[in-house]
Length: 247
Image 1: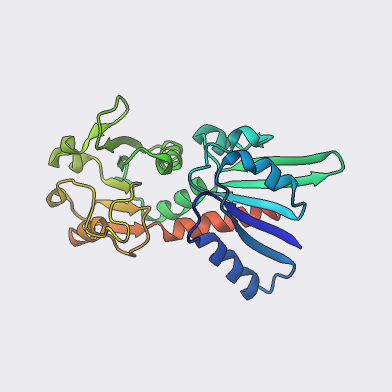
Image 2 (image 1 turned 120 degrees about the vertical axis):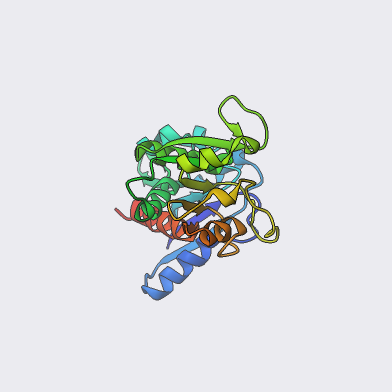
């Protein structure tokens, strides 16, 4: 049996387990299983890996995307620059095991964002500066899109929501929400910006996918802008993880 899984805490629900379980069934992939590993402390990670030699690959979610780094033998270029991993390959041989970290979130975001972009989409506003924003900023740099980070609390590396005015929105036409604003059950929340300044030149991307259309996306769409939620990004990062585990 080849095992794969997800570490995080808590793990009350998981897109990844549903995705891979259905993938194994639909594609008739035999001898594989995907499990949840809700470890309460990252210090338990090495024992978990060494204790089950059938484990071949691990996805990583909050709060361990950064905490797991000291336990890796190697990281790819993207995860090194981002400073976070969400995918780990486990190679075992006679001399032991080799753990390599990847960031497939960046791949998923880039591939789902690119179809929305046009020539005039050269500047972005990134709402939130938590862990989810790390991969987004990496991709924007890679695509040559300059950006400002918008946060609720003052920071040397960000601006405040009340600084986002109509003039700025005419210039910054890519809007990306990396916060939990709008996520079920708090569906009546959204990034506080002057939506009246938006038009068909704007693109809005929301990492939230439950509900399918947040108030943030709805308001941008009403002004003629293009919108996308984070579900395709999740699918793409999972597919990329599978490719890494099965080169």
